[in-house]
Image 1: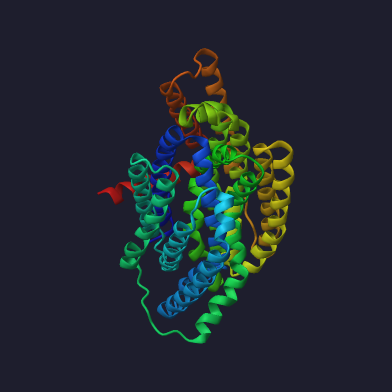
Image 2 (image 1 turned 135 degrees about the horizontal axis):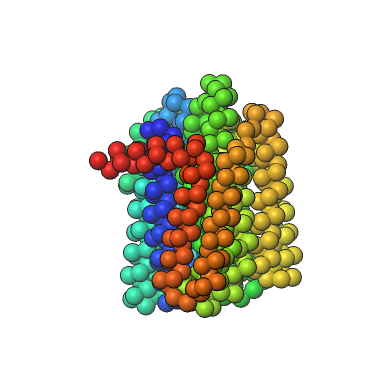
Length: 475
């Protein structure tokens, strides 16, 4: 599957996950309220934190070695053994710390957490194998199935009156979906590895731990600090704002996820021009969605939170704007970080992470204590900006970086024109119903994309090519 076709599949799967997650979160917010959601978000943050340290870069190392196309089954089996060993160690540590974790979250969750980690560990391994085999499209379709299963189970349990345990239980059970589905599609099989296979994965993983840290840093640290310093209500409204801001990086997730194994292969073969061109293209099409998403939130943040989740969540209107701006910067950071990892330089990613983790942690404690959830958003924005600056600096030392300034300019101009049209509309018709907000969203998207494909020929040609691929896939 080509980069373009695989990216489209991943992107469509991400859209499906986002729509399903958005609609379900709307329902949960109205039914459960910010307090229960806050407890759930803190549980997920702790789960992500444990997963991050338990992974130790193994998934990135597995993807890297399998993507190189040699002895895939041996590397898969070696990784299975390493995944199992780290799982046992962390389950033992979790058992010792179960009382503290239950007190911090506010409910008894040890058994749910243990099962969630068990299912997640092996689903991570299988998805890493699929990614290494360049089957990211299949991996994300499975991820879509997992999310749909999670929502269904959560809805059933909440309807039965279980509330927070319904949310956590549905999350736990759905993680199991990945394993049988993933095994059906992966080509890697159990085959006796040597110690060299273990050492080879570890030699990459010891540095690529920085990639895992980055993936969970922003979405977990904020919630953990807010949950420690403020009532769980604020964890709920912040978590909702963070989830909503995910729309800004939909394209980036699809592109960066797909691109990594290809850059890995090009790097191994010395194809620098391929990497340079792919980097530039990735930036263009990642920002094509992130820029208008930020522009829309800039105008409608309060209305979006009010109509999507309820009046209690509108206290986070400024937080949502700052977080969406942070995700706009993160689009470039994710592409740059993925390129560094793909070029077999996870050590540079780790260097960046060793700077950003203390920066984010200190910033969160200071700013959350001083100004609340807005402070957490500011800390995240600053951390992502520093991470991007450092990542670009390291990347330029390895491969010539080509920033598509003309495309970014055209995307920005199209977004500004969209803002102008929407502001003119708001002068005459204010948002006071779901339908009006939906109409403005549709109008804004139409104005933005029409303007962009009119003034930028390269993007227009690429969009036509993508629609042709989509039509072929549907026939």
